[in-house]
Length: 256
Image (cartoon, rainbow, N blue to C red; front, side, top):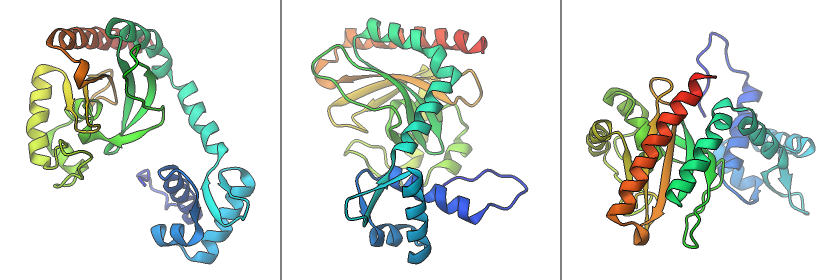
């Protein structure tokens, strides 16, 4: 978990609470006390008291036996309030709707968070064969078109500081060598868009562009399409629509 660099020392109980909630949020389902304790290493007695406190407050849920724990409904309420209150997400809605109509494919708006991208908004494809991505999903930046578009707005040294030398494969097509990824980011900067060639989901190709209303860029938009449906003509339509949407979002965010 990243912590803010301020002059104040972190509050241990607050850090533990956030780390516990982030662990539960990243692992759907219910987990035993022993499993959680082994993963995050807190003393079992203090971990149990922390879990019971969070259960009472609604941040953690438990099963009928009271021995298995998972993320609670309060986390959903806080996550929804972040999306609802974000000015960029609100400003992007008309553009995402138009991009969806122009391409007929699945559209995403995502934000870089450390070495990951988090999905802030999505528009589902108009086709029966389509990918599914939920708002709030977190994926490695290096394996997605959204993430590569955003990483390309950073310097090579910043990327090296952000990512390990060896990258964990998501599919057999994922780039796992950081230096190879950096070479591809140079091409992304040159052409203005990034491509995910089944690097995150087999059978799915994605095209992404950063929205540089700040430097380095924080947000990006993408279009995902099953490879079986992608033709050269459709690809050109998607790229043109993405560039148009990027320009519209830049104008929209200038008014914020």
